[in-house]
Length: 633
Image (cartoon, rainbow, N blue to C red; front, side):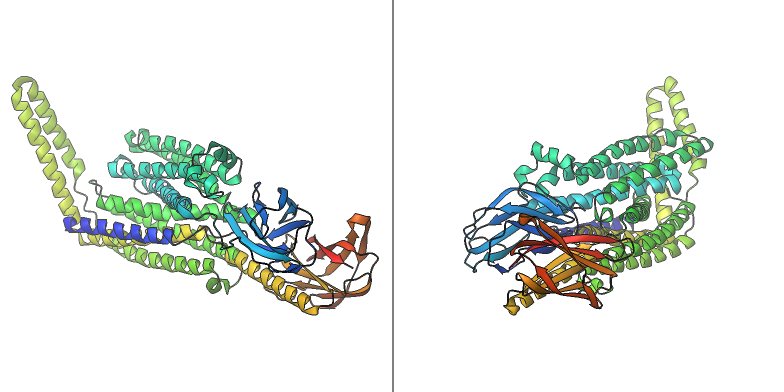
């Protein structure tokens, strides 16, 4: 029966690896985790006067390089000057040459979001009148190609290595201490360490090319590697390597000195290894939390420790499951039913922690029920939830087999002394009988091999143990696919960010069309804001009509990211003409309706490029000021 199962195991593993490869290859370029929410000039707009600078607003902080923002004329020639700079908040700009001729200009950007993922894109605007352009704006290129695929593969292997390393060690230490002397179990945990270490080194080498040019030749560029080491993601990878050195010491003690101790002597060492192993495992998990989704956005101080607990729960459950699979299929030493029951209890606690932390993470990353079906992140999350539910269902079957499992451990403890006496007798007689002792030793080894084979047949003949092996194998198969989906999920733009970006772009497009249709010189400005508190994000729109010297009608509209009116306590506006050192001219509009303020007869004393600063207060303590320039008069 065991012989027929082995080919099935190999076939299942190959199929699962093929599914994982398909998931990773169809992930495409890394999705933008920092979304472009606004720009000045806006996308597709036609301006009468060439701007002095181009600015882009993102949904979160981004990291810039010298070529992060570029402005190209219709022939593809760069017209920006100097390095990109931070304008304020999450807005970044670059100066352009003065006196740009009429035509269509292309703005390209390639930055790194605060959660370590590359973001790239492009859009166009026109000066005077649109024209043909030779610049292609065919979409994102960051994180794609061969380097992007290798980086995604490295991420998958790093997660897999972490799960096997942490979960396998926890299984041995907490559930089956006899497993410390089992060779397949040792190879499993050491293999997890080697996989995680190799994957981390690979990610460190790929990082510079992954977030930059995407060229294979740049993988071994030492200058790029030096730049990577100065980033948050680079620091996280280096920290992971240092912690892996501590993990190597932990493994050497667990499978060395610990295995050689007597049961009574193991107690104190077990406590020390449990404390030290937990610290190292939590540190490894934190190397992901400190550089990815959890480190930015809403409630980051809470999200990072929650993410650490989530990763540890995943590793304890799925890594322990892998260790149990190895113990059931590869180990000559039979695993006791008590050890399986202990793991069943540990797995139940891990699933409970996984569900609790997963619910919080889902709320944080999605923000609304509609994001489950209307965003790619939400759709992948539904697939993940379905796989977890399936895994829990199979685990329930495994628990039923565990409850019926009978210990078929052959009495090795009684037979071992007999084997030792036979070997000792053979060795002792060897001193006097010479060749006869060699024959006796061979017979002893043959007898031991026969006893081992008989024990294995007896163990495998237990129908409950056989059922448990099949259900655990099915659990492991689902877990492999679940890990692949999770890896793709970590490279996908969170649903909350995607919806905010869509709302901001829709508001920008709506205001652009309304401004263009007015035709009377009216000016409309859109500015995204984030006061930093809960429910503090939105878009403020300021209208000046007819946008000329003298009296003007001003309207201020405040909307949530989803386009609904935002009921906030206060809005203030200030106008400054920096070229003539005029202002700030303070304006306090009157509240007309929810999300709508107005002021009449707003006096503009002089024509020029006026800075319009809007202060938005969303609570008693949360407020922010955003600004944008407009040509008035």
